[in-house]
Length: 84
Image (cartoon, rainbow, N blue to C red; front, top):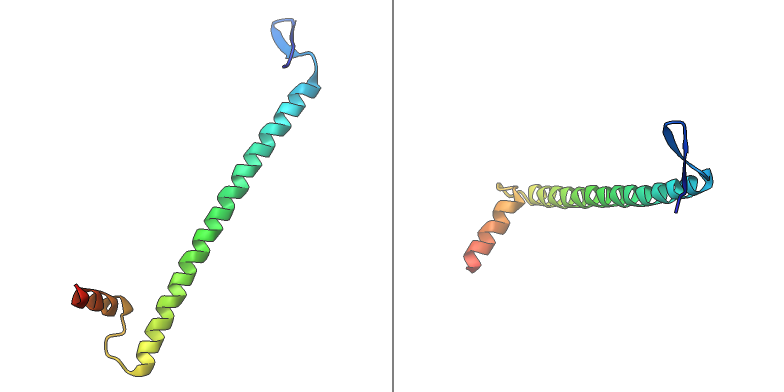
């Protein structure tokens, strides 16, 4: 725990080492959360890009086979409705 002493009208810590140690811990916690947030953001971006590529591959496959309806979601929804 930091000990405080009064200098004039100000309260200042007796030892700057304690303050530096506490600040270092706070910086580590902040950095940990920042890196976690960055990693989660990058994972979501990657996941979204994989979905985009899969949809694009299905559209390209449908066009290659010469189907008129190239929207893969419509085909999926029709298949699901037919099963219900």
